[in-house]
Amino acid sequence: MNRYRADLHVHTVLSPCGDLEMSPSNIVKRAALKGIDILGVTDHNSTKHGALIRKLAEKEGIFVLCGAEVTTREEIHCLAFFENDDTLEKFQQYLDTYLADVWNNPSRFGYQVVVDENDMIVEEVNRLLIAAIDQSIDEVEEEVHALGGLFIPAHIDRPSHSLISQLGFMPPGLKVDALEVTGRTTPEDMVSQFPELAPYSFIGSSDAHFPEQLGTRMTVFEMETRSFAEIKKALHREDGRRVSVLTDRSRA
Ligand SMILES: [Zn+2]
Ligand SMILES: [Zn+2]
Image (cartoon, rainbow, N blue to C red):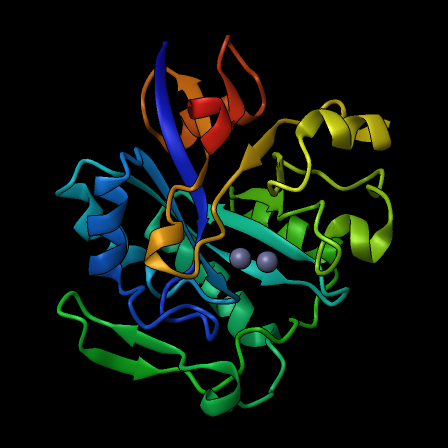
């Protein structure tokens, strides 16, 4: 079994809160320097930088999971990842359908731009990407799974925009592929507070908005090779595969 270091929660310059230095080419360069083997691209309610980052990352030997960080109607942030361009595009159409018609004010929230591999702007997105989409967490989960994707509630230990902050518990029928924690707590702390979380794998990620944050928190995947199917198996602890949260401290 091989060990791979994954940072599955990274914002680009397309997220209004993402630093202007977070262009696809800069992110890939920095990820390579940090020894990231698997990179998750998760802009707020948009998938539009995924394909370019995957193309640039291939040259560096980095495997990319393309997806988004969705804000549900309950203001819960959830990571969603898709296996191929077709399902990623279908999910983009779903986001376009349900994202609130609220316009971005760049001077207040930041710019939302799609750039090319030379950091030239090719599109400015007008609708505010940090607004919620008009779908419940159950509806988002169903859509992600109908498209064969992975569904991971983000930073569940955060005091805002998290499953626990908004609902206070894990809804019994919700099918998650894993749960993400920040450095505030450990998976063990979360399970002792919420025993219903015991069956799930936990990931840790940087939630990087600035280049220097990339890879500051990661997840180790123990699996045969880097593929969508193997990542899914590792999250579900199948056939000896597994994941564990890696922090700066545990790496020392
Ligand atoms: Zn978030
Ligand atoms: Zn985020």
